[in-house]
Image (cartoon, rainbow, N blue to C red; front, side, top):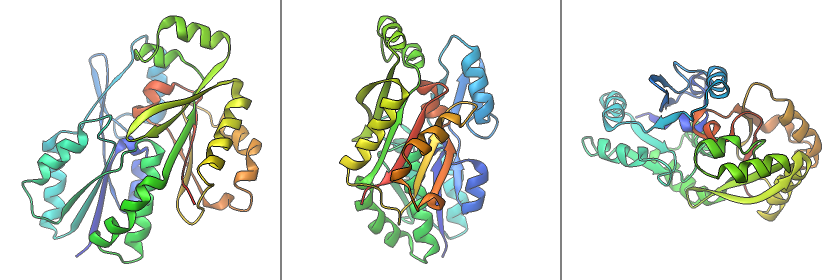
Length: 282
């Protein structure tokens, strides 16, 4: 009996990476006006950011339906596989509940895990599960191992602009204007399954320093587990600058770092130019 790992596109795991890892990534839907796309399937990250900067309206993302989950669960169930679905946080989406509803129609070999994360912190949790699967662990053993590790998964990100938080109604126009004039860079993390602003840095350099301080505060990076860096937009130049400025964090461990592009779920609010780091604490 094989272990089949399923997740969603909020993890920023590309379809190419999913194929490499032998997992399934179910796409969320992204709507620009009257146009609807499948995240990472009919809408690439490059095309998403092109559309994002060309519109004055914030795009909408919608959760995966119980029907879509049922279709995927049925394939795995008929193959006799054990199934683990790693969901984006129930604190920001109804996808977890939709998956639970769908799972009720199948046998007990379908396991639904609320990661309490999304973006690249969900990415590293899924990658950790892949490592455990490849070590020969069954579904129960994977879940028993990874459940206590969920509390040690962290993500921290620095946004380059407040404009998209304004468009999404997260902050006022006045606050966005003042922040952009003062070169304020919001620094965010995910706690208890929801986004939390933990600081406001003046300029990119201070933002990078806050990322380093956050890593130190949480006890440092466990390089025996997955680590991922990501950027939003069209260029990784800002990310390369961050890696250079904070190389003391990764010295001698550079080959263990995964890189990703932030997709629609978080990119809707970051806009281009954000960077993020996800890791398990020691």
